[in-house]
Image 1 (spheres, rainbow, N blue to C red):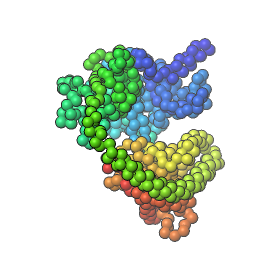
Image 2: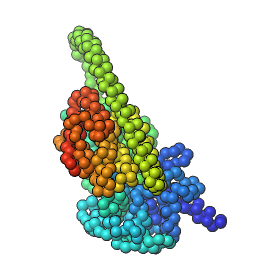
Image 3: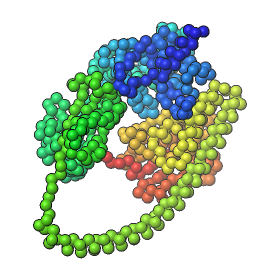
Image 4: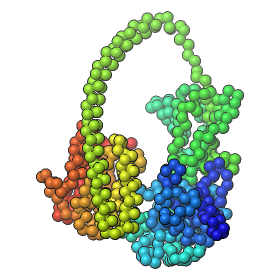
Length: 584
């Protein structure tokens, strides 16, 4: 009994173990890593979690995601990153390997750094003898070269103390390279997972551009360009390309941006050494960033002194050699003074008269503009209230349909489907309630909401679906009206493919036509007559049309337009929003 309790406590320790935030060395150990999500019981916050399982008891991973089994310290509603239950094992002595998340369309793949050129072993515990023919895998080098095309799962194995056969994806070793190992379901691309493994010896960050703002002909310029930096730079480091002796006057530069080569698998830490007023301070500006751009704010540019930025792989600064640190120095000097005593007595009467005229004109224009703005604001508030009224009607409409779906699953005695449906329903309901007061929502969150909803309905009707985002701009950077697509997708499920079961297919495609964003929902169900008043076309679709008309009033610089094409065996509903994507 004591031995079992000790084992459970060890499992709990490995599950909650994460990178040392102070930068101290940490080791991979004799474990497999699995990724998933859990709710913290103390604060009820949903987090992504690394589940470390002993390589001697690999089957314990099933316990972690069996929410009926409660271990001490476990969270609530633990679920894996995907049903594939992908896990990775690295060298036990490997240290400071990181687990940096990398976005892959709607999924997150985790990356690992293997600087010692040791092996990486990948398993798929969700693949077994009953479903292994439904899955394929591939290997891609540097996001460009396909080393292994989509292929069947190599074999089933029972190593590492496993009690049932699992999918053995393989042992990988590519010194000096970066690969993506990706596993997916043959028919449902939404079921996929992968790991990015980086054997490259990442030393010093590479600076691509240094963009200063606040001076120059256009208000900003690249400091690394001799013809633009106005002699602020004396020379450049021959190894790193950073400016040497960069000196500028106080208030001449309000901020500047550091732009690096891509480093999605290697997070950076950034420190600033400040020497001013006889004091030396070392400040940590950033502990963990995977972004390719970092801005130095005005608060670090408004005091005369000598400064040095240090950029390096995330960790304790003292643990890195000089050739692993990118150093960028700059010096701020006092502003040059200009004398105006000689001309002041001559020009002050003209300045006074001009100031009076300008002030009078300003107050007249201000009064007129306020009146006009008040009228516009009143009109805008009226339209906004109408939109919120329609959105308030959509939310209970969605809830009512979802509850009917749960009732149907219960009547079929499908307990597993009901539990999974309820889990997804809770996620979708929470997102719906959180967004109830929002006017806009990132496209990535809207697509996640649709993915959760379609997974819910897929349990009931057995159809297939795909979500394809063809826009080059990241989905986090584009906002669209909240729950703009959900009623249309729900209409496609309820009135399109519900009656055809597993032969049904719904496609959601987002693409860009110039500055216009086009979002299409297509299904292969029976069409409908949308040219006349037709109740079967969906209550949500009618509300969506009304909402688009109001959005046209609220955003006169854009055009919200809906296109419907329908035949006996295909229906396509597209929403087009003009001037929505910036040219830049």
